[in-house]
Image 1: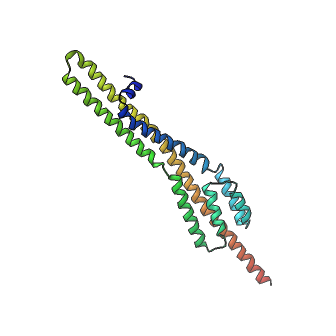
Image 2: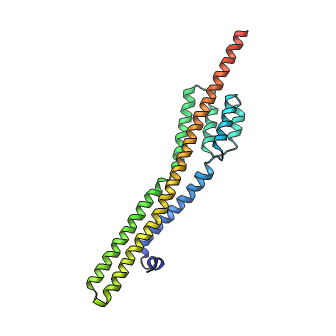
Image 3: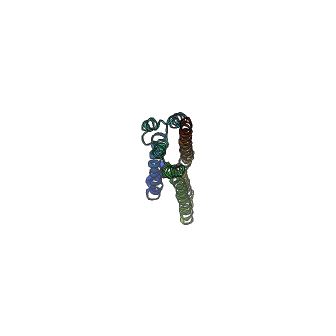
Length: 221
C-alpha cells in the first residue's frame, strides 16, 4: 500500500496528522519571516558600536535617527526608549530597558514552542494509527480463511507502518526547525540584552563626562 493510497483509504484518521502539519507549516513560515528578517539586524556588532559612539558623545538625536533606520527591530526600539530617558536617573532608565526587553523577548519566543508540541502530538497520532492498523490486521486474520490471512495481515501491517511514517514525517521536521528557531530566538534575546546594557553604559559615560566638564568649568570660574 502506497502512502497516497493509505491517505485516501484512512483519511479520517490521517486528517488530524495533516492538520497538525499544516499548522506547523504556518508557524514555520511566520516565525522564519519574523526571526530572520523582521527582528534581525544585519550587523548587530556594527549597530552596537555606532550606538556606543553616538550616545557616549551626547549625540542623542543622531542616535535616535540611526535607530529609525531599523524600524521594528527590537534592539533599535529598546535603544530608542533608553535614549528617551537619558535625562532621568539610572534606575528609571534601567526599568524602561527591562520592560522593553521583557516585551520583545516574549514576542521573539512566541509560538516557537508550539512546534515541539505539534511534533509530539503528530508522533502520538501516528502511533494511534499504528496500533489501530495492527488491531485491525490481527482481528481480520482471526476471522479469515487460510487463503485470505496473508493478504489481510500484510495490508494491516502496511497500514500501521504508513501511519507511523506519516506521523514521523510531520514530527521530525518540526523538531529540527524548532531547534533552529530556539537558537535564533536565544541569539536575538542576547542581542537585546547586550544593546540595553550598552546604551545604559553609554548614557552613564556621557552623564559622568558632562558632570566632570561642569565641575571643571565651576573651578575655572
